[in-house]
Length: 129
Image 1 (cartoon, rainbow, N blue to C red):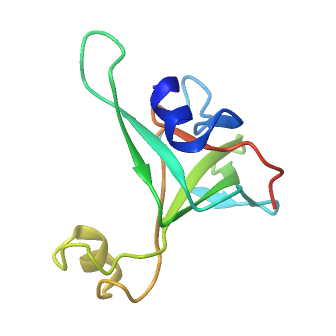
Image 2: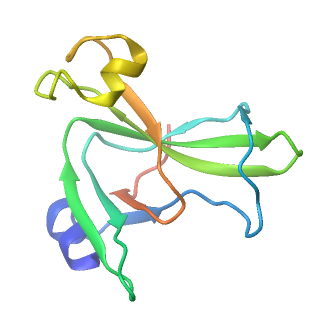
């Protein structure tokens, strides 16, 4: 994972993931002030796979922006989540669930989502903006 990420982004990178405390229940969250855009539009995203040991599927993304988003849960717990916005969806399948839910067409708006806590995003290690 590290070798793949550094081969695509260089050696000056950082790994981020959504931070959720153990035992936190599924709940509604409110976005708090202080959203931080991470450097660059290139990133590596690693998705945990369901195996008996740690296996990740990693891929490079070139038309995305990553953010760290502070959240407050309905129970008052604060956490930080990683969000990824796909800025060019023009090549996506028009039947993709995101387009159905948002009632939009490919290439019209960025599609953003939070990453689960067991996924990792690697980005250039530059100052957040």
